[in-house]
Image (cartoon, rainbow, N blue to C red; front, side):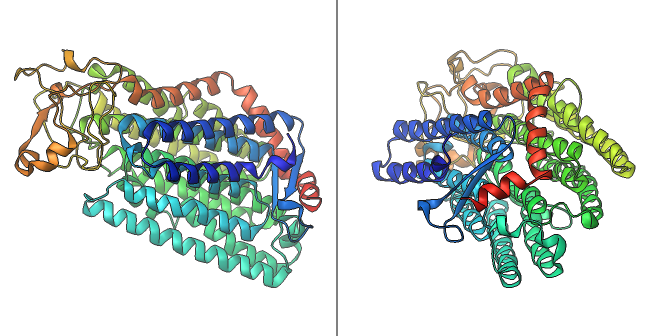
Length: 573
């Protein structure tokens, strides 16, 4: 792949976003444009992986400006792996949003494409100031997506979550920009090639770089600056939560890996700080999940805990540690998205994610139950899934580095993680079905489109309300075990008797009083369950065929241990 094509990872999504805004409210065009662009980007990233199977890097200065002026775009194996997985997760989460009705908004696809451009730019740039710029490009559409999740009907939790999310990220960006300014003031450059190893020999550059690392740690949700994620992520819709889980914190983690490898040259003097903080992140994150009562809140705290595992790899800074950390990063992006998507499908269809409000869903929804079960076991680190390989290799790397205390922490946290996954399983999927449970539809999404049996979609629910009223069958209530005959289309859709969102708006009294039983609700169709099933299948495949991804991760780790190829590519761009 030619280095001159690297800027297209940013330019094409931006141009497609502009085009979709121009064409207006044409849902099919938006879906094709969004998914087509992302599939193309993933295919191009795969070509980059094939080019770097033996290591190396390529770079290009935008518009062929001379070195020091041009914005350098650089790709190596680590970058390529991240481009593939972030692109794949964007496709899957967009699929879920389309199936749940969330993508019906005319601005959804353009905002996701601008977000993609920011993510790709942040992964490719070798300039710290432009890293700040691309992080901002990521954040601006994210604010819009967060707001679209609860337009005109935000609960107090959603408003507070959006406010916290915006405030925290503005603070993070400010701190990072201050750090970049300090680096420029002390080193006279923000180019990664020129900064290579400088923090290891110059204390002033090291302090300036530490400010940037602190900002990235906030964005990655590292203890003690972790609480914002657990409060903000569950406050948006399941589709957006899954999307953000695979992009935002992971770009920050990538930045920490890359910056410590290049600018600090893996300076061993400060690694003990990372080991301490990341072990604390594991413990505090997993303990935070113990008292939570909703599926997404539990998963958000476990996301914090797992970030500690991922970053432990860079704190070890050995070939084995970096390989395990990169493998863990890629595995976690897929598994966490799968968990958010499986529980999100239940929340969309049944209107609640609260533990105990529903039970016995596995009998009615075996496909989504199996998807959740696979991803949950992988998160806990059980074989034969990718989570087992990730934790086992990280434990071996920790033993090799003499970090026995970290090994003990990892094993104990894994046990508590398994117990939390069983809590969700027992509270939502297992047990007797609550067929007589009334689930209010008073908070149905007013902005979601009205659906019909042909489209296979229901509007997506908010964290506290249902997505749409369920089907009824001539006044006769069915048991959980008996499927509603009118809801047996491939998408598990509502029957034509189901009230539309516009009808709900038009009749406030009906909206306030309507309630349905679990048995009356249409089942989760494959259109909605597919994303969770697909990602669960990937974690199983990565577990059974881990050798391939471990080999690629080792190549990426070698590029972080020896940054010569990366630096030479940047300097020659």
